[in-house]
Picture 1 (tube, rainbow, N blue to C red):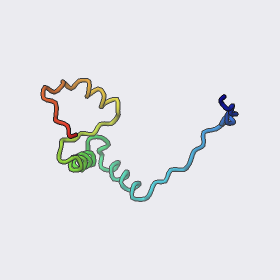
Picture 2: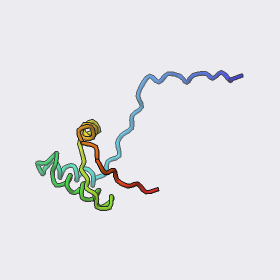
Picture 3: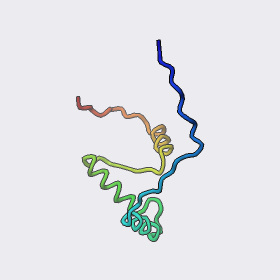
Picture 4: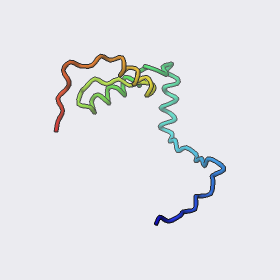
Length: 87
């Protein structure tokens, strides 16, 4: 026989916390905004280069949303030579 549990009291508000954003992050965002490049600028290229290095030199592209990545995936033709996988 299963035990009956009492549901928790309903939450009448969404508890929020103040974000923790350090001065280095604020300065970095300000630098990007001052650069005039909000999309596809030097910071994006820098991120892609660092990700490529992290991924062993494979080509890397970043996108602005998961929806965009799914659209690209659907438009990309299938490979005729699937990459070999490590066990």
